Length: 288
Image (cartoon, rainbow, N blue to C red; front, side, top):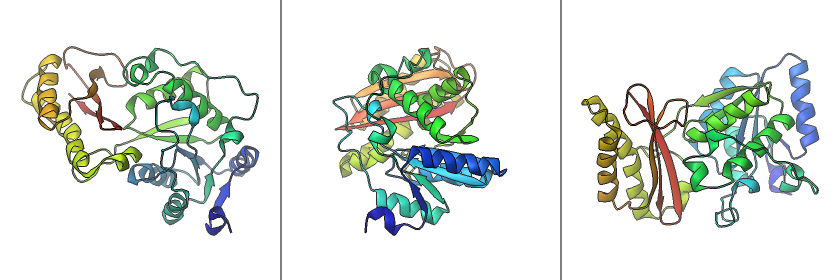
């Protein structure tokens, strides 16, 4: 018996079949929510499932480790794939349909088209991980065609990714509504991520400094500091004191954009990316 056959929910591997199921549900008057994931589920993912279950008649979760968003030096082969555990978690949450395609199902032989993303994808994650957002936009556009749901649920932790998907929906007039749900954090504030499992115990202790540095930015602004350079300096001092030297970026951007600011004059997203060993962690927090 395969691991898929031991799960009571409806597990679908065919793009044609999942599309037919969703269209049938919609034609019967049901609203459909869609949560695209790469698996290795944690409470952050499951909070998106909860939101969809609360708002929609039917919830579909996809589990697909998308190869086109990984660069050659990244962790595609090592990316965790605990499928049995993921399906069990979704069953316990009340999700009835899971789409688990193979790479060949999503990218059959002969596929050449990709989605070219614009300026929203250029800085920060786009600069650190070239072609990453092209892969994200391509797979998301394919998934939205294959799973033609009413609403899609994404997490706030991947702030720039959410903006890329919003832009994709607007630019291509896709008939789906985007929901961006709050970050779910560990007790010490670390944003939940599948890649947290890569951290060694001492690195896991250091990692909480990312959230602490974001809180330092919030506290500095609350105390009257508006100069971004001054706030960044305080954040870097804290990160360095925690032994985090490899910081990809700290960016202050107008909320809802990737437009950097020099002064905090309104709702401002502070985004950070840093490396701990082989792990690359991202986080963000809104201040102002």
